[in-house]
Image (cartoon, rainbow, N blue to C red; front, side, top):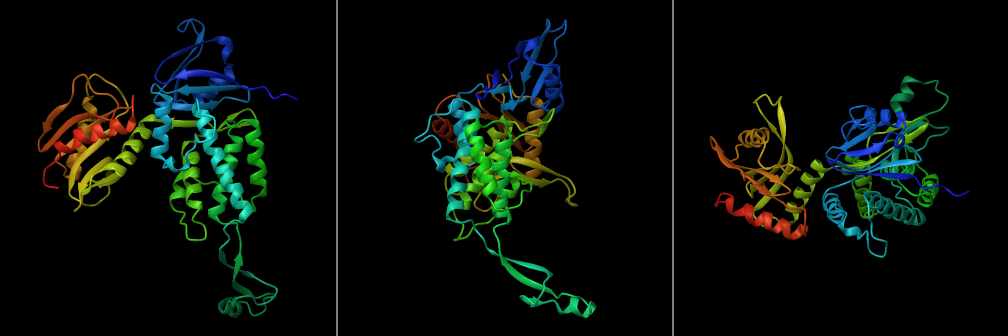
Length: 400
């Protein structure tokens, strides 16, 4: 039996798309409005829309499977190759050389499949070699004394039929392996992978001798490696990417829908931070998402996008990324970045845009100098990064 490929409805970020009333069912429209309101503005057919659906993506791109037959594909305004490079830089995926020896990705869905395939092949290889299985200390009732006898338990239960012991077991059912199984399982039920890849995913998941329990992208940060499982570090990077960009679970009847969504505002911030971390000159350091407390009681705090400091930790400037292309800076953004600079005791503040402002920003709020700058995304990203850095450094205090 031939499996029919789903229909892809192409959308472009920030641009309204008009669809005939028959393009979506009422249930699909309700699901979009219920689960994906932050990502999409939807207007149902009415006299105001000329009897058509109107879908306008907000600051997100990606793929949303509405069911097995219909998929929304939201494309970015920038070149898709640059979007892939931003993702690779922001999530430390450059080392995997995802496109070498494979068909180039044309859509975000293709890119997602490449990452999933890379993880699948690495997990399958490790499964053939043997999963990491450290010794784990367990406590429980045993038919005979194994390991160390729990004397306190024996004293409190002298008539116990079995002794309680602390003992060690050799097991693969640990978070280091469970997170691999959970990530592959999410990819398998997402509806974003083609049927042959989905079958391979399930075969590997069934072979993994671990418990299935949920993990988040943040959990990948807390998993350490050692000389016995150094190769797990690369698999954690792939897991972090998949888990971080797998959107909220939705329901379409009896089906589970797991979209693949990229918040472009957040990606722009992560990309700029990752690029700067690799290219800043000696003597300047980067702090991302630093919490700055507003009072001595340390009860209220804000998170500052990016702060550049000298080697002693003294702040040089605050950077606040804004993934939008206005003619002039929004006053609320100006107030926000200068507030961050005041809270951090920083003399310089910059709003970073993906395109130059028609009316560049340059002003002062008490002791804070605030300006606009640009990290362009419409050409060679490394060249744009160097231009951004070269325009930024001369504006910082000379004594670093």
